[in-house]
Image 1 (cartoon, helix red, strand yellow):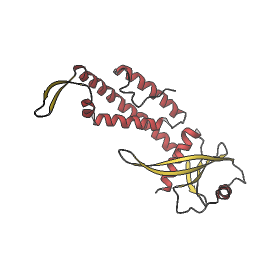
Image 2 (cartoon, rainbow, N blue to C red; image 1 turned 90 degrees about the vertical axis):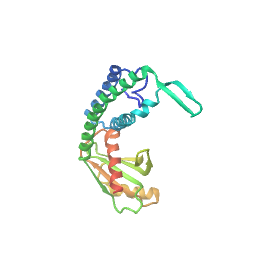
Image 3 (cartoon, rainbow, N blue to C red; image 1 turned 180 degrees about the horizontal axis):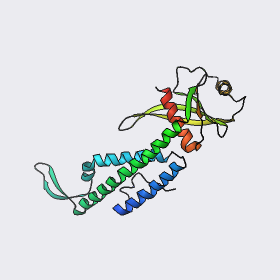
Length: 234
């Protein structure tokens, strides 16, 4: 599997044709993953790479100021140091600008494909509570049903809030608890009774039903987690 490192733009030899080759090889694999209905981790990688491109584009002057410079004069009376940017840096900055200008629309195009796939999967899933829901919904259980495979995966979840440099996010941590074959006896309510019996608690419990099958770990579970966070935090 081809991975694109977070520092792919500045790592190693900075050359437009070389970086273009790396990027297009990575994006070709991204498209293959999407064609196979595998949404993650490539979709989140694309968004992170695009955000990095935006930051670099917006802060180009700051980035330019970080390149090596040559001291041309020292003024100790005014505590002032004058610099001259080394000659080859101007070419280096121009090369990076060209790579960024090429990469941003390429990332955006593949992100659009990922968004279309995400919406396609969302249309095939329904979220609803199982029984009574307590006031505390930040943690509990959800049942992910795959009607094609005739399986119900039960996960414990915990929703947390964390902050980045830009905004607050709600994150969700999940742990697979059990798996059940769909049957008359393995109803959502019966599975919840088992959870109550085992935990001695009355947990918040939800069901997410997928009417069409997708790759479990790459698509169904990530989409289910995002939908659950949105559902319980409205």
